[in-house]
Image 1 (cartoon, helix red, strand yellow):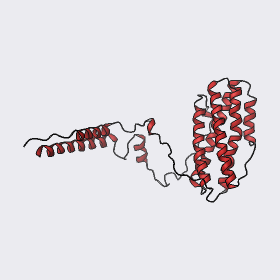
Image 2: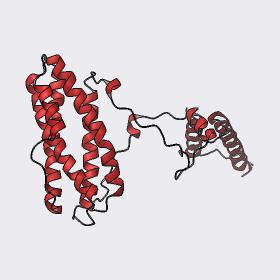
Image 3: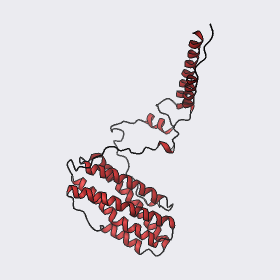
Image 4: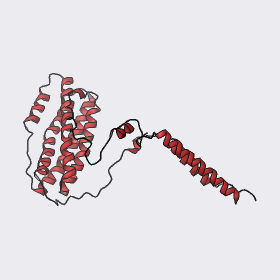
Length: 257
């Protein structure tokens, strides 16, 4: 009986599968970064508004009240083109975020402040009185970077817990703005990371949360393994062997016909 040829599509599929299995594990590419899609978040003002929700909306307003003038000041006082451009972009984006925030506040009946708080005014005065452009740059970058780092916990808490749809959407939008601003500030290359506050130590009861983690899992994650006790190399070799057996079996079936 004449042996039948294996279809090209089958050969190609098997080759691609083998290449995938033998590719280095844990390699990420820029295209893998997830971009939030249109999630269908609504903005009807529906749901209970808590004291924490109101505080969040006020904090978003306060952020714009000092970061817009700080960004404008960077365009006037800095001799570093990169810092001036960062200030311009942050000021422009905070105007857009402030518009979103004021719309939510109006919908929910939340009264907003019209001037920065005491700490923020002190930071602005510090920038105004900076003796040199270089010192201004350092103050501008460090104060804004630290402030953006502090707002993250508030955003996360509200995004995860609020029962009001408008506040939830505002938290989602604010998170995107804040991450963009942190990245812009860090692109200056002069962030004093050593001056940033450190995170609190983990609680003593760590590991008893929703997903318990044991030492074996931590070691596997550190070494790049996906299953405790087994390395990626062993797993890939087993899968590759299984693929080879499958190819041989398929060829025998086609030759027997």
